[in-house]
Image 1 (cartoon, helix red, strand yellow):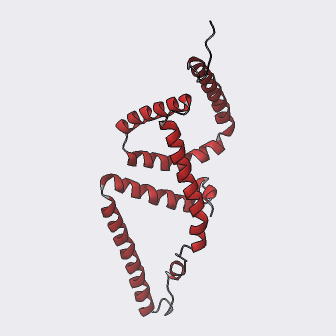
Image 2 (tube, helix red, strand yellow; image 1 turned 180 degrees about the vertical axis):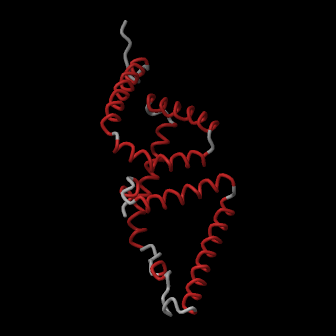
Length: 192
């Protein structure tokens, strides 16, 4: 399954399992430490596997199942190895992303573009309020829920959302033009 099909809930069972399991882990992380969540999750998984193996053993001894039938055969045959080619292919993209981010941050902090630096500063200032209202884990949970709900909502109401977004973008562009007109540009000559 591809990521868009999971996000668009084409297979509700698979999407629900992925969405629910990650959301439950995030909720547990909100109340317990990462080490505790990982250890309890692994213990639950180990207990589940032991129960399946014990059930399989009892069914074989009772004559209800064939000897050698393993209910976890499909899981054990699943490959868990990350190919070296995948890592080699991802490394240039990852380094390019990191280098681009560092270059952009340097440009913003050294005020190479006044407008972009002001936008960056305002964004950081707004993040202080967001940080005061929510912790990072709450934002991750909200993002996870939005990641699974917003695409489906958009698909179901595309015409209305596009109309509203068009109006909002027009107003944002108008405000942006007014703000840019108020900021003195580098190299501008005063007329006397």
